[in-house]
Image (tube, rainbow, N blue to C red; front, side, top):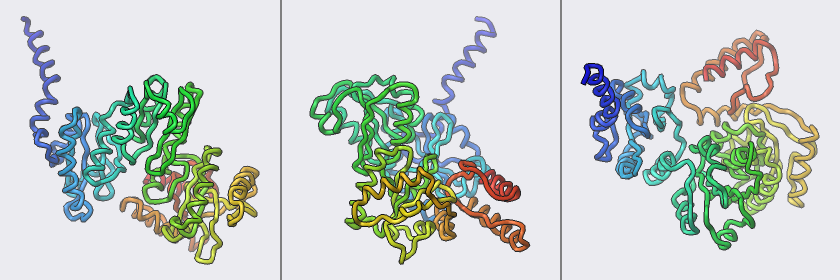
Length: 431
């Protein structure tokens, strides 16, 4: 054998065996959380196909409470056919790693898939975390062969994500879109199913694509066409439930959706009258998929509701259209929903909005407090600094105060002076 052949063989063996060598170095077979450092972090995320990383600080109370949950989850995940490794790194100590991955709060959780980081927004209790992470190692599209298989798939998927089931569809019909939205939903196709299953999921023919939101007891059926962009459009619009309750988590989800938000503010989400109205909103949402329909209770999220000019004496329910950023629209003569024939009032509200019978308004200042509770501290400091600068400029009459929203301001047309636009652009780059 020539010298060149020997070198080539050695090089090939190094490439093939190096991940196994590193995996052995990290001792992942004992189901324990790996403690990473700056020196081995890059090696770890390149060695394992799936590695879940907790960026923590030793002084952080939330981090301390999360730690035992990760210990339990690591043991359960180690037994999967495709294991998910759980690791942690002191991001306060190893600031270079923290800076590289934009860590501005603790704990920050990311799952690295083949070395690529993905933000983790799921639950943090061990059993739910395991169920959530299993989705990342599951097939892009699961193929189901029976009624019992469908029931098992829905049960194992849980309630953290929407579930899409294609009845009578070939997996190729949704595989491309499934890969694109894998981190946001479960996808499957059912090859064989009975009339009983059709009755259970309320569809009357195949092929069809079913979208389930178990947490909200909602489902939507799509009958095609299953070509071009129609499937992707349906899936994208079905990632959120028809009626979305506003919370810290749902506000983060709304960042990824560019549709206008029809927001209904009620006195209390738990009241019977509110629940009846939400059912009507769900029907309207099904027929008007170009909007996201959301609702919030004044008693549940006072700071958020007050940003839309709602106070203790405001007649409720109140409907507005929100752009997801700094601007909302009230519809002339349709702002408040009265108790009689609310379905017709919702229809009239949408008609008048489309006709342009609106008044554009800016979010109230109380929204700032709510937004800062959802952002990392680094972003908060930047926003506070910018507000201070704008305030100083405003004292000499040269600039308007900065408003803060939840979506990127580039999503809608800029207004105001040139210097104001420059300040917003600079703030977007900083964020």
